[in-house]
Image 1 (cartoon, rainbow, N blue to C red):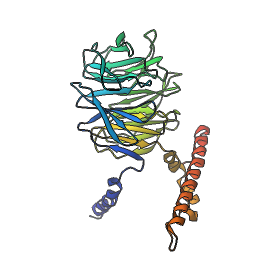
Image 2: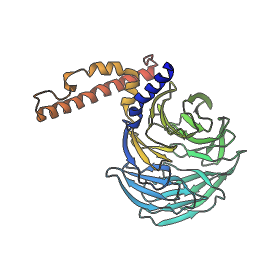
Image 3: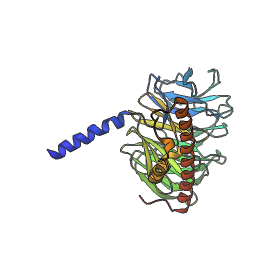
Length: 381
């Protein structure tokens, strides 16, 4: 009975914690009428494009949190969306078609070369090429500007449903249901490497920006990290309690975010394999992630019909390793609550100083974190 009472009390005390919004949640767009499946940023980071299970996509202005143009008309869910870097067109991929749209929502062309349901697609960083994988052993490469198929890529022995470009669009990674991962040269359409993936379906792939790593997220709840200089598996990340739906590297390649059917997003540290933080505000499975162009925020799409934007804050890393030192430095009187007899003006001025000092402290410890991470001298917890 004592153990049961202890468990009930612990659960009661934790209820307020998990009923609050995640402290790193910046925007919460909840106006979707259908589960959100995918999300992307504009090149300037001011606009989101979101794809939904009802076959439509919508533009969202981030600063004023307003929903704009709606378009799509796919008869199945939209699995991929992208705003071209040039700003001259938009891409939606759903059912077995890829559609190209003008910024005003005029349909420019429809690619109908895929005969089965599209499961993944990617627009390269130049906005010139599209690659798409479906329920087929063959995936396809398209010219995004001409609206024409360029090539079929054959070689997988199982469904090649996950594909992505590297940062300069010169390479393509693809993964199949049997765990095969292949790296291809886009120009020659030749296979240049094969990796041993997870034993179950691979749902997502991502290159690090510098081309050093490839990550794969799987139905088996794990994430594999491969060193592409040696084509060897260097780390398996475990922590999600359900299938991993997407993985994305930070701009500096030191961290990875992942999302899962367990309703969470996790932040991983690549050199150590540690999970530094779990973002918990979604109430249903999270299907897609995308970093903003500057890498300071990221967006997520979920079955709970919401699109959320999160702060990819250095505070997360600092608090994980150096919270005792930071807390000690923040004992300064400037951080005290409003004092008896203190005027509103004086308190406002002190709050401004406190904010500035806090930023200085966290920036200093973040630089220490980067140095310690590079030198392998992070604190032992």
